[in-house]
Length: 158
Image (cartoon, rainbow, N blue to C red):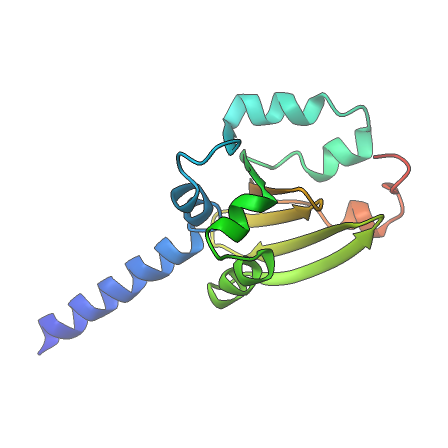
């Protein structure tokens, strides 16, 4: 009986880790081979170099603990061809331990920021719905929210 309980606990822990890592993995798997779908991943040094290219010191300080950046660009028509929606993807993320931090609508764009807290790294998913295209970013690491709430970073500085 004890072996069965230990096995079940191990399986549940493994599944929780898998669901947390599935933010972008699900989209990449679903749209693999589709026309005009592009996915890129920057780990470690390359992610830090990409962040340093942004010419805003407070922003660089806020995101200096990001360990990897991954993104995928998907035409909106591919979503409808697969009978999927951006809202359905967001719902999937929320069901898999992501918290919706923010939704912003501006000039026809809808931007959502979601967070999955983790023991080692947090996972941030940013969904940009631009009408013709959906771009999803996943960043692993830590973003210091104090820089955003202190007024050091504004939308004009980005």
